[in-house]
Length: 264
Image: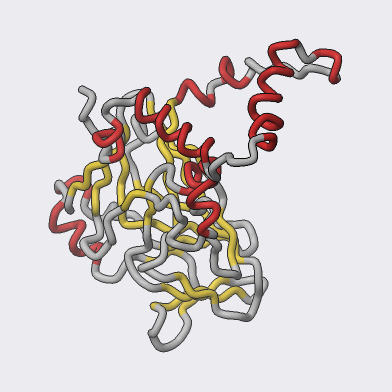
């Protein structure tokens, strides 16, 4: 049905903050001119949902080993694999007998230097044929000291922890991760969009001589004509783009809400 959610998030850790719609202004960090007039930037920033950490966290890498602690905690603990505080007992109390002892780790050090895996406290499931692109938040300035790997999660088939792999980029300086700042942006993608058949449908025209009269007309309409209009209002192309999307999708409001949260 048109109103069924594309993505459903299951909150496993009770303190995990629910995902929320990504913000077209990149949490207020985009320049106002971009917010008002640049649909390319705001569409990218607002596409998908922000995902957060379930608690504040600090990480430290000495060039060899990774250490961690709760952000305001005392002392650094070497990282191998760590459970979220008290979660293993909560998981065992809720899980069927045969799954007790199988709670996912919150943090895991990976073999590559300075790389670890972080669980968001969520599991994600998408509608058939849809996947989630898991990435750093789009157009949102990130804190220093780490970089996120991107991944395509085929979450209509794989029902497991929604995690990310993080690479620390500086040594001997604590890196703080905040629970109230988006760690990830997950974006719904039809599986057909990244299949081989779609990605092989690409062509390159070799030079200017290959442009057709229709191509030149489109260039004139898009690039040249607007600059020849003295009284052209700013942001007209952005307004036209929004009107076109609204006309193409009468259920735009419902689509914007195409997410559901399930509690633990």
